[in-house]
Image 1 (cartoon, one colour):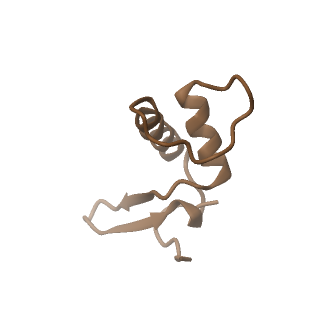
Image 2: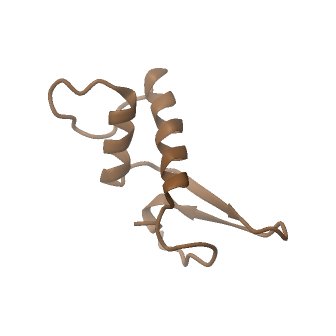
Length: 80
């Protein structure tokens, strides 16, 4: 699934990155399955979420909205 990013930069902003990492860390802390192989002794949900984000395995989308109300949904795999 390859999309054309029409709103915003063609990569994740630091704010989107923080939002995704926080949301995924919450999911992991509540028992969601981990999607990547982790090095030994890594158990912090934030570190796990960042590892998953860096590997590009998260099936999430970002919604970018303009002030006029129009928006675009962009898959994370398209924002690298």
